Length: 168
Image 1 (cartoon, rainbow, N blue to C red):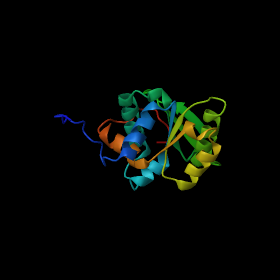
Image 2: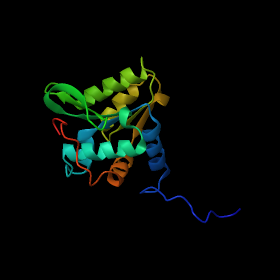
Image 3: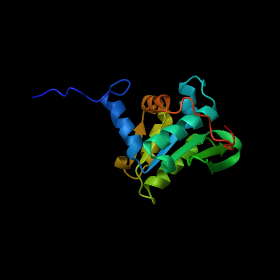
Image 4: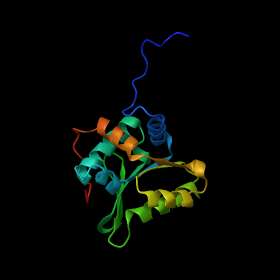
């Protein structure tokens, strides 16, 4: 056969898993990002505000802004908001963990809502809770942080966070 003189550029890492995870992030009905887990993977080099700016830029470029929920541990109270860029940000509050909120969201979204959900986390326990809570395994994509970080590093590195995002 003929060789393609202009093959597509491989994603960083070039693995099939990375491509599949990137596609799962783009095509899901809902994308849940474990904010503290992502920040931890960067050795907390990114502040909450910087992570939010990167998520907003990636979500806008991938055309998934209204589908993204960025979750953080703690906060003065359990609360959520939508940034001016359209990304939902939630805080678990002083008594709960973001992992609990994420597991509950997966259970609800894949159950009554019937959604396909992608969760970006490296937390093995949380991944197991999400698998158990999902109505059907085909409704859940557990996305590697390698894929999420690759997307976030390509997008928004120089964009500031939207003002008014509390707790970041």
